[in-house]
Length: 377
Image (cartoon, rainbow, N blue to C red; front, side, top):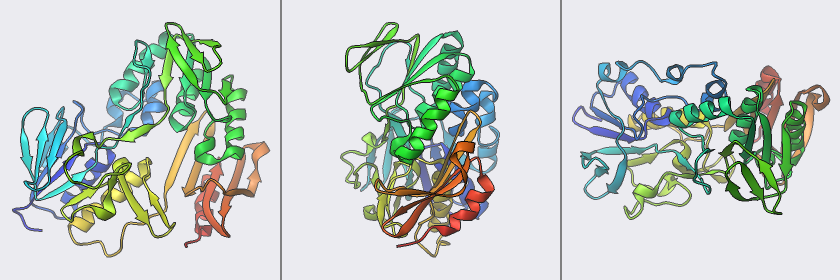
């Protein structure tokens, strides 16, 4: 690429910020614009549901670098600027402010948006820094908290709320927390962890409605709630791309996108040769790895397709749970080290004669070593 080229990155979180920093670090001298729809400098999201809610980190500790770093690197950082529309033929991004931003190459890193079926006072979602600040303020004044959705975000928030002294109930349509992400067997271990810390788990039921001071379940029963967090999932932030001609389908379909357009992070869907699957991962590590690869690919420095091993983790109470790989619904869990009873173990997920994932519970070094057991298709 030459000095005259202009790369525009829409999305200023982990993926977008990493691409911009990597491009500059590895020699791109052309124009570089990063567009973010929040007023804050780019920041890291995983700490929001942990250190952010607990108050052990101030909000500015989550930032990716100082406020002067972008200008010093010649990066035009446009904040509080939402992308409204894309014109592929004209190579223009149209912002809600009325501004038009032309590009030679475009990177889409807009992430996801939380699903919120109950939009009313004291009902929270947790995606942004402002969300985390507002939720923490509510938790500090609450006695009874109901968390709807027991995936990663819901389970972590329930743990944080309990550590802040709240009476917490965790509700999910699945019987056990994180069963969809980790399988039922580990899900029940997570349920035991929450129960041991005083969280009430209500599984196998949906929420019918949220009222002032209460959450109504599908059977008509009610749970007292001063504060409600809804963590029932998210959807790719692609509404602004509809009608553009860009291939969409639960994210931006990277395999079918034109050469001048890339997608990275939570919004990107691509085919993994390693696992033989179409993947869209909402994992922090994937956002960074994919961003670094994409920046190098834009600089014609990548030799192989992006196909790293997915990695994610969650911290709840005294438990650090880490996973490498992909967990199919039919996977069988096999303990290889340690003991679940001691809350220190490593396990493999096996499916179709292959080891597709490795999980560690409070055994990080051993889990990293066992990553080598993952087999390719």
